[in-house]
Image (cartoon, rainbow, N blue to C red; front, side):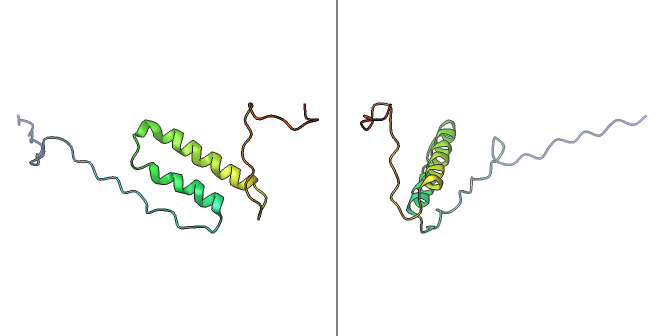
Length: 92
């Protein structure tokens, strides 16, 4: 009967498994639309923020892009109203 051959895995000089460095894309090129460019500019903060904060950053980019889509072309963006903003007379 033959004995099974066991081979020890080859170990490198490093103690733990090697991980590839994260390759972040270059900054977004300007689109010519200031609202879209502003939204995409938020992506620059992702690489330097902790992973648990990425969802919040991506949500902010999403919201800013939706705001850009809702804006009338050629007009300045309308600021978001908050519940504390007074309503114009006649609105209820």
